[in-house]
Image (cartoon, rainbow, N blue to C red; front, side):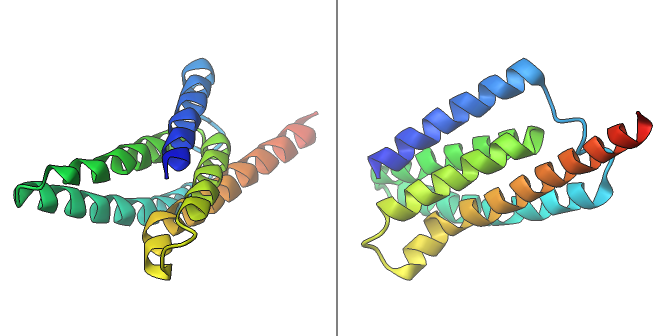
Length: 147
């Protein structure tokens, strides 16, 4: 599990540097269905964030400070969602990598734990990557027609 958290931090740092260096992907803004695909990609991450926040705050409210451990993946999920919204190709790849690493880390756990911890990143990563690549292909075709 430590590897998954470490890889999340590295992914956030790499995509964060890309966002700071290149800014938002402007190709996505002009294509409505790509934006809709990205909004759908936020839903699994939002549900995962809700579950993690519920676990963390409920444990802390009952006096168990170990509920703080749920806030680390919550912060990673929120940051990756924000960065994927800004740069869907890079963010989608980062979400897929984090999802695969999380799936490997939770390999011995049951299917429900895998669905809560790994599936949202995998589904959202695929949706963001598909949306970003679609916007890239459409913008390339527009450029080719213009030349």
